[in-house]
Image 1: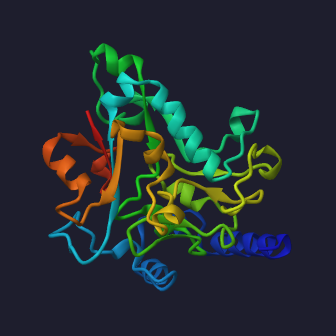
Image 2: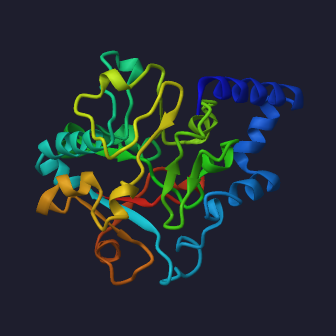
Length: 277
């Protein structure tokens, strides 16, 4: 999208929101009115927030819903895994490395347990949990508020339940960032191209003024490959990716065998990322 069209859409969108009541309209976008849901479902070949993918009722084995299980203990046992998964993801997706922390772009990042799970406070964390970090990424929610909030359908949910970004549709309004309760989206305040160290020509570059985030490596899934972060973990099984709707898949077997937690499940977004604790 050229700058003239992007600027026009920004001004037109903001002006319209202001004329209709500003905050009230944005609140409706985030909470998902009937008209917004209908519009969101009409594009990109998916039902977006209405896919029947297994969180509610019985999963349909004829459909796919991709998810991930992350074993926190394995990241504690091998702290080098964190750096490897971040480097692999950011290298494959041309994520810029800005020198100023305030401009940081994150698809996957490492943080402390208490930052990841503020709804599960513990005054006496065990030493391993307190002293090590764990990876965070987009949760690819079953009911993603970011999808409902996007006025141009630049963010959408594909047929496999993966929440995607269409960089060409993004007008930089950042409604999706405001709607995401997990802080999983980043905004390009600067031109990213000069800060990409090793350009991957097989993945699209972004421009200043667009939002980006983890895509579960949808481009790799389509080729029958694993996400870059999962591949970087090697045989450790610290991250396992698969179809949640398949009862015989490795990820479903892990979920049967281990107690897992999710990030702030009380919000009702139904995340597709699970953590073994």
